[in-house]
Image (cartoon, rainbow, N blue to C red; front, side, top):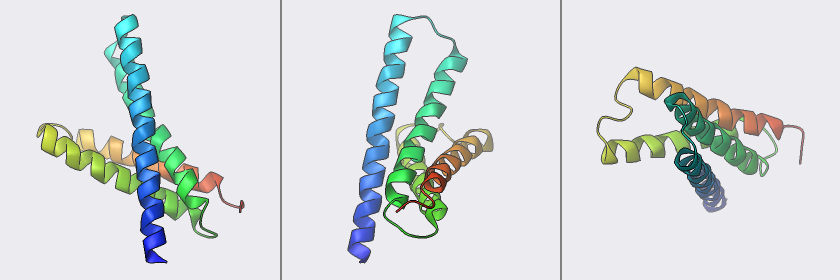
Length: 123
């Protein structure tokens, strides 16, 4: 049972990061092709966070019969922890202040939880 649970979470996180990679490749193409503002770039990055957590929250919570929003919330939290850890290793200045951490954390958590909530009532 626990092994199956861990495997579901790993599949959800892998899916989330594949979707993030796809969204960031599209964003980089848009940046290459057109002159976009910094706000558009930041918005695209935040969209990648939310969309990835949303889809992984939906996929993982689909496997459970109750508390689906908590499974989505868990996926958002795991996504953020990995993102934060890799960012700290790669760039020690990234996500150092609360102004960088809190919005990203909130968006990841809310995106995952919303994905789980949309699976509520479905089997």
